[in-house]
Image 1 (cartoon, rainbow, N blue to C red):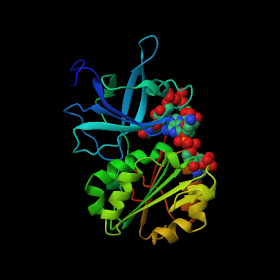
Image 2: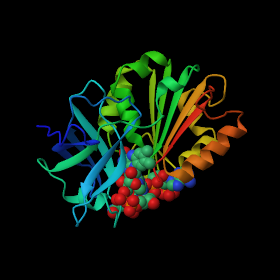
Image 3: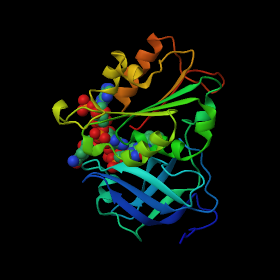
Image 4: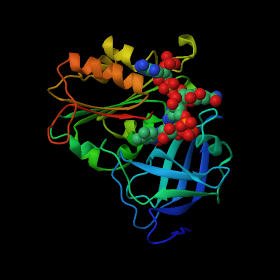
Length: 260
Ligand SMILES: Cc1cc2nc3c(=O)[nH]c(=O)nc-3n(C[C@H](O)[C@H](O)[C@H](O)COP(=O)(O)OP(=O)(O)OC[C@H]3O[C@@H](n4cnc5c(N)ncnc54)[C@H](O)[C@@H]3O)c2cc1C
Ligand SMILES: NC(=O)c1ccc[n+]([C@@H]2O[C@H](COP(=O)([O-])OP(=O)(O)OC[C@H]3O[C@@H](n4cnc5c(N)ncnc54)[C@H](OP(=O)(O)O)[C@@H]3O)[C@@H](O)[C@H]2O)c1
């Protein structure tokens, strides 16, 4: 059940309806959705939790659920000592969380005016907004091909794999999921999981070879989400290939979302 704190307030108070821990420090959780809450896949919410003095601490969290779903889903990592996320360690159904009434952000597929292959590159929890996009119909009809690349430290941190592999299998070849880990020994990886950073695998041409699609200005449009160092380094690689960022008034080839 939702509780709208006050019609004039900037936020509503919502209820946790489900919590799923992928690892000790990675979780997905669902909140009740305010009936008036509108967002586009790729956008983020501002979530609030009280600190010891009862003051709300606000943090940005990308929405993982699709716009047609009745709840709001988020995917988070517990940062050791983190003011907000340490509270997520013990999150349980019936807990309360505040949600700003507005959704924010510009990493949405409608900002690309052309291109036929969408590359979605994520490190860690940067995967979340792409899950929302793939749960929604719009991105599937807008692009001929979708390539999702998820980089994580460990295989255990490749969350949402079952759902994403099922979407890939049902896509008739239009979705390719590429996963890469950096801190497990290469010999220990399950079939199909790559070893190395996204940046290294992009530079070497391995991602493009596996996807059967190139990353260049003619047909590729790229989203980058997660670790700011990954985004900075990938941005330089894309610039070197003649690609430029989407700006408010001008079309471009890539959009970025830094998580910190
Ligand atoms: C637009 C936007 C969307 C975001 N969406 C998500 C999301 O969907 N899921 C999510 O977990 N976080 C997301 N974040 C990060 C989130 O807002 C908080 O910064 C994070 O939850 C840590 O808050 P904290 O108070 O616990 O830690 P803080 O005390 O604020 O510590 C911040 C430090 O933790 C590290 N850090 C922060 N976020 C992450 C992360 N996601 N992965 C790895 N290291 C991190 C960085 O080193 C950072 O300097 C997003 C941030 C932005 C700006
Ligand atoms: N057990 C725990 O408590 C635990 C577990 C996991 C995470 N955390 C916390 O969560 C945060 C880190 O989370 P995370 O692992 O999701 O995010 P992350 O540090 O951003 O790592 C995710 C992936 O991004 C890669 N990466 C980092 N910098 C890159 C760059 N410049 N270019 C390309 N790829 C890059 C990493 O490779 P590299 O491995 O090569 O850096 C890793 O494969 C930390 O604050 C950590 O304390 C805690």
